[in-house]
Length: 292
Image 1 (cartoon, rainbow, N blue to C red):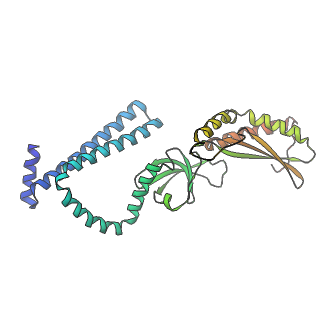
Image 2: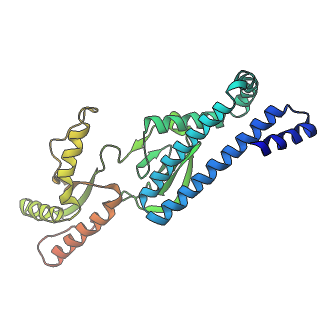
Image 3: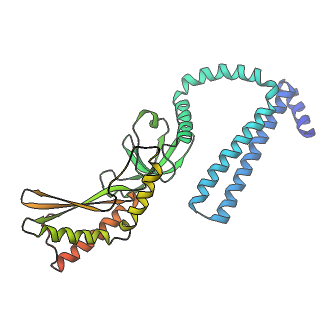
């Protein structure tokens, strides 16, 4: 502190600014630097012990919030005696900045809403204002999503990171594919000629979809999820197991295999189901229409 006072006196002689204000400004800057260094050390320690684990991001973000809050409290205490004067200045400056930086302010408060209300979190698959993907980062002004193809019902990643302003959440509708429920309903349409034994085809398709390792584990998990959120949402399902619907369309029969699946695993499930169906066709156990 002694050296800080000497440095502050030196700057007062040069600038003419009151030594106490200079002292507080320098102390504030040092406090911010110290907390940045602490956060940097925390990040490196986490990477050393946990590598690139998904938990590292979550722990680091929580540490960032806690340290930033403590830093703000310390700065508030330092400036407490001069707060009235500071607030008066800030009020005038804020009024001018709000007009010129309204988008910045809007995004900032939308970020507070996202962190408080949590309409989505890291790893959720969301869609809003023509953007669709998996959330990979949430910041004070924007969030990032790993884009998935909207025209591909199996929703494969494009590998592109999209930076989306937080304010879009307050002005557009939001679809969350994994909040509360990790699973979505998906369908595979199998077309057969009219002369097939529909009961036998259904039996075969049920055996195919129920043999998939991903699909067959989901119903029990889904029942638990429905039970967990039944207090907060008026949502219920009478059936969570795969089901096959049949209808006649023109000159063929369509069998709609409807099943629950995690959005990120849908393509693997569909690939497995079609591989088994095509194998059965080669063995002559099922007859498919040419345009399946």
